[in-house]
Image (cartoon, one colour):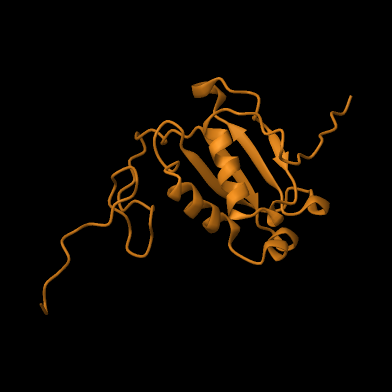
Length: 150
């Protein structure tokens, strides 16, 4: 019908009405609203070298997999964020995984870095995300060893 306006407001996962053209940017900012809980936060390097290795928008691809698995909300929520250079270009494309230890107490998968993630298949990413949601150690994933300076 011409002239009718869509009355269904576009809302983000937190229930806030969002700015047209965005999927999560709220129209009204409430500085007292707490941040939404996440169990795991993953930073995906999308700087020049790492992005060219994957040849796609890796963060968006991973967000779609997380949604497909139902891990984009709830107590096992996985948050995917882009980062720029993390100084590990020789291991491209890298991912840094951080657990919300304050809420979950999990430290076995906290502050680890995975390398060559541009070679991961969709199935491997699914296995990674499910392992994280179940607090399984990531033994089969190739990690970057960290040197602690003395």
